[in-house]
Image 1 (cartoon, rainbow, N blue to C red):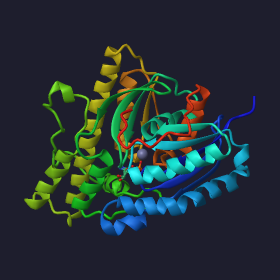
Image 2: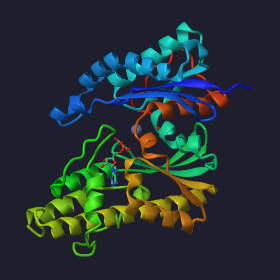
Image 3: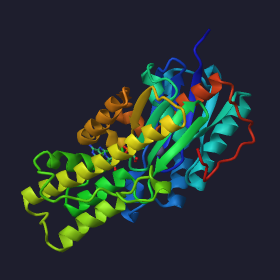
Image 4: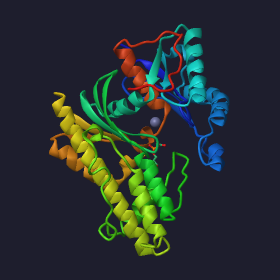
Length: 352
Ligand code: KG4
Ligand code: ZN
């Protein structure tokens, strides 16, 4: 049986990405055109601008991924495209492009849920990530825990009630006047905060663990805005001075410690909830930019160990929004026969 080859297209937010991936998990070509520089002067993503850039960049991304693969469009078995959730104008560019390509070549089409693609990514390079598994998505865009029962079958257990964990790292880093490292691949100030925290004492400015007394309905959800506000208050009341190196380091360590404890506590509860559902996860998958943080990683490894499972993290490059994850989700969905008609539309708000 020949390997499947799938072209994945992602335009849900501000990255225009395309990739060609095989059913054995080989990446034959990939391109990701970022728009950070376009939106940075506006202090946030401008939907109209994002859509314009997708319109301009999508053909370039597809061309580049195909060129690298050495394949013709007709060599492909399927086109997978992010259908939602995301910005409507952004999504519509990718969906229209993907549908048109597939229809013109009478090729199978798969519409992909963006969060399903994040969750399935770990299975591409780690053959031992079998269903069911517990997945924690911790990035600048997402903070969510879920049980992946099977392809197309998920139970979302918890998500953030306010900021994402990555946003919290970035906002606290700003309070600490740390440099914003805007790397081409996503950036964020998390790595700078982690570096400085190594010199810090987390017990000097103890921070409250978020949601310690929250109602049971919210038991599995996350919250990070309180931590951020607490750090801001401490700065405003001159409890610490971001210009003093030791203060900066101690505050960074305190925040990182509190964030890691919060994530660990919620993950522990997620394992318990899975157990109540009669699910025994085979693995804890942790994905997203914040998964590179060593303190977070150690705290979650501990939770995995307590539950007698291993922890798997896709490499950071594949944790950010990319075309590979969409192509791989296309492989996974195609294998179980989940194809879509050429008439599908994007879905702005789409529960998993
Ligand atoms: O998954 P990701 O690269 O992409 C987006 O979601 O956009 O996540 C980026 C986020 C940023 O907020 C960044 O500050 C955070 O992940 N991050 C980290 C670390 N590396 C990246 N946060 C804490 N510690 C790190 N080492
Ligand atoms: Zn994403």
